[in-house]
Image (cartoon, rainbow, N blue to C red):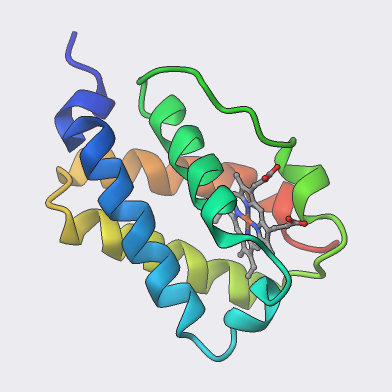
Length: 118
Ligand code: HEM
């Protein structure tokens, strides 16, 4: 079976999606403050590895557990939704098939409680 990782265009497509996502996040005045003291290059690497893994590509994610990574950030539901919308938009922009976009949306809905502050 062709994985979603292959259908989306593999590593190069995922890099494009993640680059676009962080370009938008870092130029968004509501979202950029969260990233002020973060090394964005390593964040992008982790995000790309995680996305590849979720889509059935190589399982090489070596970052922290999502709950631990976001625990001290106080992320609101509104800011979470904003990031999800930008992520889905950047997938569409990279011509990802809609069923891939739908699967990513489902995954992001499922991990929301780990990332948004209680
Ligand atoms: C939409 C789902 C999200 C996913 C899948 C995700 C994924 C990740 C990953 C993989 C890391 C790296 C963990 C590590 O390096 O060990 C990370 C870190 C981070 N995320 Fe997210 N994230 C999401 C949403 C958000 C949102 C909504 C915000 C803020 C608006 C945010 C802000 C951050 C920040 C600031 C870090 C760096 C934390 C640090 O280095 O201490 N994330 N995220």
